[in-house]
Length: 324
Image (cartoon, rainbow, N blue to C red; front, side, top):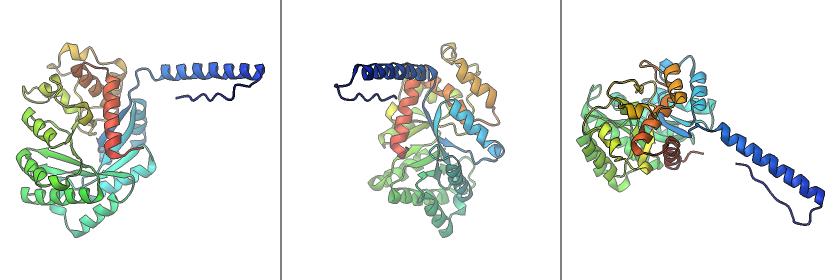
């Protein structure tokens, strides 16, 4: 935005002319800047796994492509102490662009001990670390026993409440147990983000009733279920002030070419957004620059402009995580 400061009204005619010329040039510059931003979204990616080994060789390029696609902020989430430290390191390399979350994923719950807890708190004490996570319950693979997962989740909820940080929670086939834990912590519950939500309508309603924020990823392109994400988007069930966007890269590739996607949705996708997706992202390695197509899908269902979805979700993220 260009600010034009007008001095006192007793200026000479020459000064008036200079002022008018400056105003004219400023207006022309502002118009040119706005024109350059046409088709540009203002996006915040609240969970990307950029510490994954698939990004080891070209994270600079990944960041550049994200910026070119309109991604203004990225939160890199950790799943154990090592990846949380690596996420924190990235915040130092890309200050005010990358932020981090630190946590112990449920698959890593069996590693929890006093040393892990102390290390986690140390990482979270850094101002660049804006959330606890990823943590939660995952009963699909059971690398850690459910009892271990629940204990470690409770400990991280307490840390989040103590530090007054929001918390990224993943849940897979553990909805009832997670809801019970959240309800038991209502007295000191921090802000909860349900990471990469891909559940059913009744699960969504329960999370929203608990005040949770809902993170959507490229999984919205895959769902065919009559009471899942497809129906949730069609009926606009997620309030925009509780909606967040995640690439979850390198996972959750948006398959825009799937046969079950209606032509009316595909017609709303822009060439620019598809170019980023098809040139730089694959099923093997998704990138944050894929987010514009997911924004366009959500906007089509909500019958609004994609830049409105981008701005609303970015405002929500900035307020929730305290981003600059």
